[in-house]
Figure 1 (cartoon, rainbow, N blue to C red):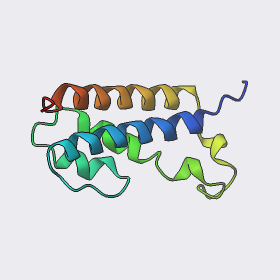
Figure 2 (tube, rainbow, N blue to C red; figure 1 turned 60 degrees about the vertical axis):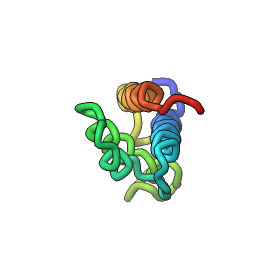
Figure 3 (cartoon, rainbow, N blue to C red; figure 1 turned 45 degrees about the horizontal axis):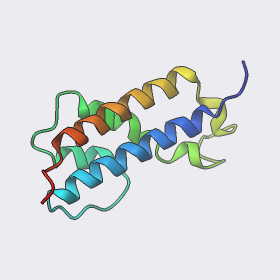
Length: 107
């Protein structure tokens, strides 16, 4: 199988969803810190069903793919594949879509 940077796809999917949720929370007047999406989703009383599971899935891709010693053995690329990357991208797309649909109207 040709190497395709699947770990980078997973990490950037997490980053995109993180920024979208932070943007939504900040637009609603929340002060938001840290990279974890899961607690941010908990702060959304109108979070769609299934968003928490998608946030948890993405949060697992926040740290390990970025560091050469993120896993007990081998490099991060050894632990990622196309299926994981596609799952992460779909989860991020769902979270981003939710955030876009729930942004307050501009003033």
